Image (cartoon, rainbow, N blue to C red; front, side):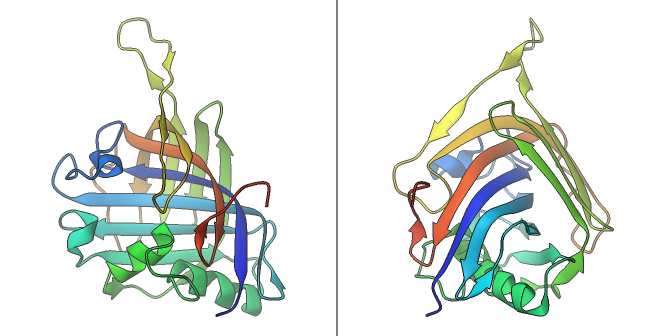
Length: 213
């Protein structure tokens, strides 16, 4: 198994209500799971291949809860990546060189037998985790815009975090609201003013690691 690490951040929008029942092992709000995800690597490596500064993205869609499978997935890798970096990031996002159930990439890939060809596109990524704002724009695939949840009475930003013990996605995530517009092969028609997740990424072959590592 080739050793790898990724330290960076993630911005995700799915079609569930704020909070997302999937975070609590419950069924999706509307029965299906449909999401656009963006990732930025501050620093990372796959063996001797450096991954610093690169972006990745995914569009995923399941007819029911993720664990029931039959998902549809497309991965997008930063067009700036070299052939070696492209190969490394695709393997990580496919759950290769990863212990079973160790990362959300492993889970998403195993639960998605219907995979489109990986794309190499311009990916624009920005995320302010503390401020709960961000954008992910993937050329010809999707545009995601995220912001804080607003109090319906005062209009003030409403801050909520989820803190997990164990799991394969994150330790702490800020909750927000986002809208995604898709232009690619996988359509997400229901992702409007729905669940957004802002979190740090600290992963290795074995799953979540200390960010100080």
